[in-house]
Amino acid sequence: MALLEIKNLHARIEDDGREILRGLDLTIDPGQVHAIMGPNGSGKSTLAYILAGKDGYEVTDGQVLFDGEDLLALEPEERAQKGVFLAFQYPVEIPGVAGMTFLKTAINAHRRARGEGDLSTPDFMRRVRDASDRLQMTQDMLRRPINTGFSGGEKKRNEILQMTLLEPKLAILDETDSGLDIDALRIVSNGVNALRSPERSMLVITHYQRLLEHIVPDFVHVMSAGRVVRSGGKELALELEATGYADYESDAA
Ligand SMILES: Nc1ncnc2c1ncn2[C@@H]1O[C@H](COP(=O)(O)OP(=O)(O)OP(=O)(O)O)[C@@H](O)[C@H]1O
Ligand SMILES: [Mg+2]
Image (cartoon, rainbow, N blue to C red; front, side, top):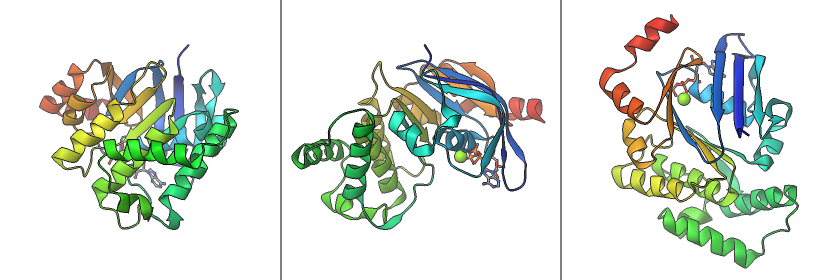
């Protein structure tokens, strides 16, 4: 069974009624990595937000099944507990909330939802240390409030740290590569690759073929004007890098 099945999804902005997703179809099987590319404003982040349950969007048609269940009927925190994780294009700063406290609370909430007991503090600390070492994050970053005063690249690492510890079934990475320097791109990609497994699927939104040299996708999709207009293998990313989106934008207009 597919892990994620999106059929004919239509959605609009609640405030102004503008339709952003216009009949989007996408199916992701367990263990697969799918990349979404496409011009600015084509609706990539909107899709990510709708899957995660951010408010401000209204689904007007279509459906989304996650593990066979109606994802859109679930509250955002239920989706997270069932294994949907979104790494934001623009991670938010949360002053006053210590990153470690937040992580521990989130992990234990997920464990309880799965019928597992809380992690002991030593277990938690060991997992944080392993994951943060791999991402080459400093102890100082871990002690600070969430993302507060972090550089753009540090925020992205922090998103991947959260993802590593929460062990999602579906990880949605929205432009996780933007703002990363060359070394950080490799470090973050290694962090993501370490999480690839037959039980975990990923949806990687990116503008750059470069990221997909590190995180090699099973499928690449082009999104334009709120739909998937073309799908292919990893070579499609190379082709797009060479040709751009001109062909697709005229289709959509
Ligand atoms: N809350 C909102 N209010 C008004 N317009 C919105 C809102 N969210 C999204 N949009 C509009 O929806 C369209 C799609 O935006 P979205 O962020 O999904 O694009 P994107 O494909 O992620 O682009 P980028 O590559 O620049 O990140 C844009 O025109 C954007 O202005
Ligand atoms: Mg976006």
